[in-house]
Length: 132
Image (cartoon, rainbow, N blue to C red):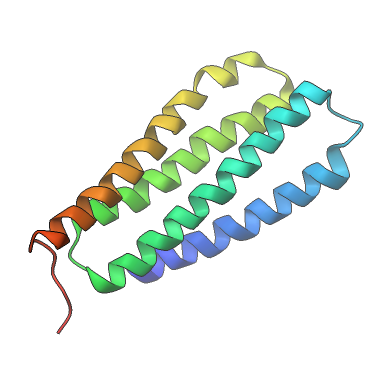
């Protein structure tokens, strides 16, 4: 399981760099300053939560049986797709209704971090499984 999250984090990081570079070099002058700011927010949160996903992958090596960490990883992926994806789409299309689904991705991010906290809390209280 950690390998799949490492692969997802590597792919997500690569995509964030590509989208960030595209925004910096390919979109300047094509988007209004407001839409450019929205796009940059999507890239910024994409990067931050890719690092969270990478942390999940590393933590799963220590606690491979943690369901909370698996939830965290899945929610990071869902959040990246919904939060950043909706901001990318809003920027490209100007269709404001994409912004209405962005908070769903934000909620996924919040719960992902919460699940990471739960996993660490359980381990610190003797509930984690360590490899022998």
